[in-house]
Amino acid sequence: MAVTGAGGAVAPPLPRRVRVGYGLGSLCTGTFATVPGLILLYYLTNVLAVPAAVAGAAVFLPKAWDVLVNPVVGAASDRSTLRGGPRRPFLLIGACTLPPAFALLFAAPPLRGAAAAGYVALLFLVAATAYAVFQVPYVTMPAEMTEDPAERGRVLGWRVGFLGVAILLSGALAPALAHRGGGGPDSYRTMGAVVAALLALGMFGAWFCTARAPAVARSRAEPSLRAQLAAARSHRPFGFLAGMWTLQALAVGVMLAGVQYFATYTVGSAAAVTSLFGCLIGPLVLVMPLWNRLSDRWGVKRAQGCATLLFLTGALLLGLTPVAGTAFGHGAAALVGIAYAGLQLLPLTMLAQTLAADAVRTGRRRAATFTGLWTAAETLAFALGAGVFALLLAVTGFRSSDAGRFVDQPATALTAITLGMSVLPAVSAAASLLLLHHYREDDTAAEPPSTAAPGTAPSAPAPSASAQKEPGRAD
Image 1 (cartoon, rainbow, N blue to C red):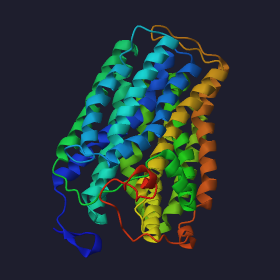
Image 2: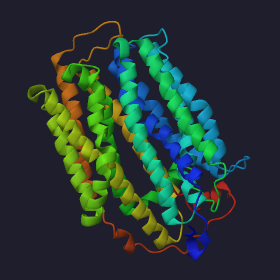
Image 3: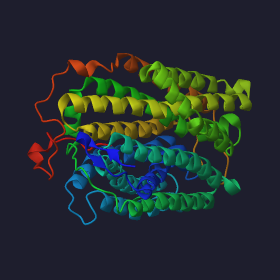
Image 4: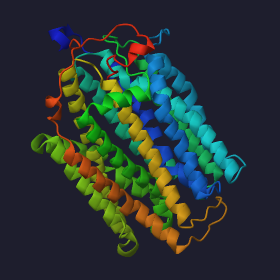
């Protein structure tokens, strides 16, 4: 069946192999976004005996580096003349470097304390850079493979489907492997190798299967973070929306970093992290269609408010686990998981609507500029979530140890673990509601249109001095 592209032109649908193959790349993006946030901090403090504050820095700084390197990778990809197109060679470079770096990250060297933290931080920096090399061009490709919105939606549908599979699979598999046989260094080495294989499957699969993908458009993003921020300052709706999502990503990042500690010290079993994570993420695929229906019926902004309130309620209920029991804690986690499905879907829907309105209003394709900032804010928020939880552990006297011995924790640290999984995410979610309240989907109508011709996009990279005015790289 033919599809209608921009300007009414009829274009053939993308081959199924391209759609599915592109979706395979989400096995990488979902896995790398989940596993380090879930177990890396705990690996440092409870296997490599790294003090909590130092461990937090080792997790936060490499991910914060992503915020700086993403625009560099985007600009390099935009200007690339490599054989195989501007995007796919970067997918191959990332596929060749991220899996081995990830395996080495959890190789558990014979180091402890600050030396171990330095080793992990260095490998995590390499892995984060390799991930950026893959991910930034990857999210650009759908807009360049087809100009038909419906066909692009089908491509992104495969991406979202594989993303859910990746989060569920990696989030359940990695902790189970890491805690097999007592959770020693050998278990973490095995986990690192298995997850690296999953990363390689998704990355090489996306590179290989998109070899015959058409290139119907070429777009470019702003070449620097400063230029992206300058563009965003002129777009109030995007500012409120991105701020809301940053606070919600911070809440999720704190929970991801804390769930392993919550399982070990509040529930009383390190292995319980698998069932808790299942409750948090399990509803993702099941209830996401329900949030979509609610969005259609009530409007996406109102549905987003409901999801945020449900997340806030579930987070606060988690804090009652020490007195209400393990089953109650799992039920509260499931409530958070139902809300999390909405928080994954609805902000992206709002973002797509906001960017579509911006393109109509200004006649410029600036999607990549705004999605680049969106991704950078998300990355920074998740990293900051782990850093905040680590700082909370440090100031309340948490005692780090290696895998060979169990250390009793002071009551202040145990209380902090429970509060960090409940009150901190709830406060961040509540703050996000304020920004959601100020977000107006029709604010863009008041802004003056650009004089640029609608839909124009130069076919070749422009000099850096004028690149700040170029249309963006669409996601």
